Structures are given as structure tokens and as C-alpha cells.
Length: 222
Ligand SMILES: Nc1ncnc2c1ncn2[C@@H]1O[C@H](COP(=O)(O)OP(=O)(O)OP(=O)(O)O)[C@@H](O)[C@H]1O
Ligand SMILES: [Mg+2]
Image 1 (tube, rainbow, N blue to C red):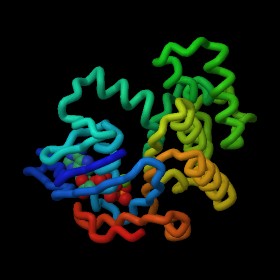
Image 2 (image 1 turned 90 degrees about the horizontal axis):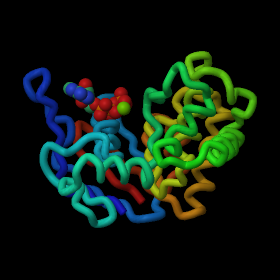
Image 3 (image 1 turned 90 degrees about the vertical axis):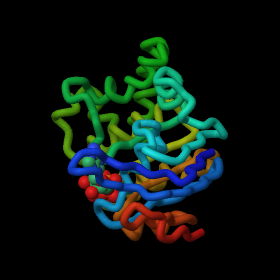
Image 4 (image 1 turned 30 degrees about the vertical axis):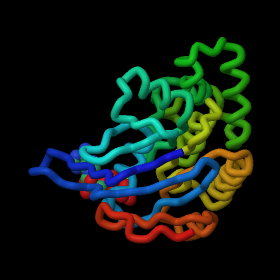
């Protein structure tokens, strides 16, 4: 499903910093892996490329065999909107919208009718145990509630690829375990999952662990 071939990412700011160096990676459909590594090693940079939010400076990224460099912005946002769910490290919720409106948003862009949109959003929010917060504005939520809202929003399109950047970082242990159980369930339904984590107990749940150090894949254990 995912193939990176010698991908590098260089930021021009600060005199040109290379954050990913020649990373090659292959993730099959239905596979679940975690990405671990020190702060600043390039994990989010890599996930952003995989989520089509950023492009490599060099090398190639194939999504389902398609060379993503050949896609225009419209094609990229189509793929991103329908086939990839993304949980951001900093959530990216829209502060003045309610919880349920935030979760519905991807379906709004797909022109799903309002009643169906609402029904599906409420269903996903029940899965992350936020049914009691549907009409709170996002800026009135706790960190863990923001995170659960972000997970519900990533799941709403039933995308086949779920990318999550520290999805349990702000959760208490019980809620974290519930989110991970949800991920297990997704995996059992054939979704492809890539999860960045600092938490070794989270990492231990994955069959495959991709270690990133200083912009390189230093170890890829299955
Ligand atoms: N837009 C940018 N411009 C310049 N440098 C950047 C930019 N984004 C990230 N970096 C730098 O790239 C490096 C890798 O960042 P990245 O966010 O990928 O790290 P990370 O592994 O996700 O770290 P963390 O665990 O702290 O989230 C860092 O040194 C960061 O400062
Ligand atoms: Mg990061």
C-alpha cells in the first residue's frame, strides 16, 4: 500500500536542514506498525509525507502503486480526504466548531447529506466515549477529549489507511487503552495502521516496530 524509495526531506529554513535521509519503507495493506524514535528524529515529517500533507525533497512515494509526485493538488486532496485518516500530534481541531461538527467535517467535504453525517459522527464519538460532549466547542475540551475527537474525525471516512501521530500521548491510561483497543479492532477489519508513539507499552502492541534515528530507519523489527 505504501512504498517510500530513498525519500529525503530538507527544510530550507535555518540554512537547509535535512530531516529525512534516503528513507525506504514498504508497508503492506492490512499491516500495523508503530514508529518510534527520539524527539526531532523525523517521525512526524515522515508521517506527513505518508499522509500527503508534505512532499519529499528527493526520492519517491508510491501510494497503492501510484507515484504521488505525478498527482496534482486536487488528486492529492481527493486521496487524502477519502483514503487516509490522520490524527495530528496537535489535533488540529477547529476551535469554534462543536465536537460533532469537527468530526463531521471530512464528510461535509464529501457532500454527505447532513442527517447521515450527523449519525455517523455520533456513532464514532460513541466509540471514543465522547457522547456526552457532542455540543461542546472544541476549545472547551480537555487535552484527552481533543485527542479522542481527533481520532473520531480520522475514523469517520472509513479510510483504509490510518496514520496517527502520538494518538495516546495526552490520554490517561484507561482511555489510552480504549483507543488502542479501537486500533486493534480496525486492524482486524483489514485497515493499515501506522502509529507514532513514545510509549513503549503502546509500541509493544505492534507486530512491527520501525525505529527512526536522526532521519534514518535504524531498525525495522517484525
Ligand atoms: N517546517 C520546518 N522547518 C524547519 N525545520 C523543521 C520543520 N518541521 C520540522 N523541522 C525539524 O525537523 C526535525 C524533525 O522534526 P519532526 O517533527 O519530524 O520530529 P519528530 O520525530 O516528530 O519529533 P517529536 O517526537 O518531538 O514529535 C526537527 O529538528 C524539527 O525542528
Ligand atoms: Mg512529532
